[in-house]
Every structure is written in structure tokens, then in C-alpha cells.
Length: 93
Image 1 (tube, rainbow, N blue to C red):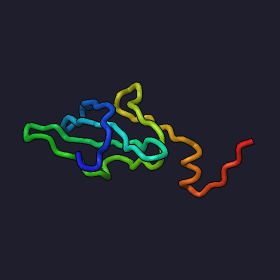
Image 2: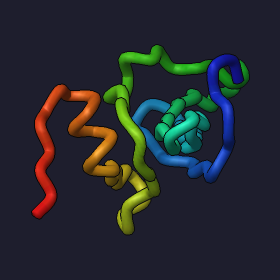
Image 3: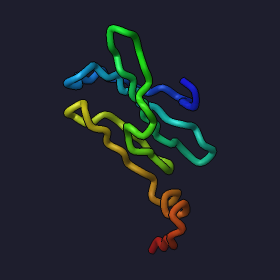
């Protein structure tokens, strides 16, 4: 998978028109992990990657996992890297 660095877990999800394979992983950055999600349509014609705009783009260091309903993705971000990325001043007292 081009641009997909580390595989974590995959789930097959039933969509009304076809089955979808959701692959969850992450990029390894110097400061931390950057979650990634790819979708693949599973049909009688084979496996086809869904367009990258089919899912929201994750930005920043954090972790992602499938939610309890196995259709949603839970994402949590590290506060300090995210604040730096967004250009926010972070004061810890």
C-alpha cells in the first residue's frame, strides 16, 4: 500500500452496495505516530482502493482504533504536538 507505513488492524464492513475492507495503521514520525485509514471495496471484480477523500484525513500525532460498533474510528491526539502544529500557545501550570 503506497504511503501506508505500519499496519495495525483491519475490519470488513458491510456496506449496502458492497463489502468494504477498512485498514487502520499509522505513519511513524520522529515525534510520534500519525494515524492512517484506507478503505478498499471488495467485489466480485476484485479489490479496489476507495478514493482518499472517502474518509477524513488525520493530521498530527496520536492513536486510532475501531470503535465498539466496529464501523467508526476513535482518534485521540497528543495535545502538545497538536498545539504546536496548530500554532497555539500551550501553557502548563
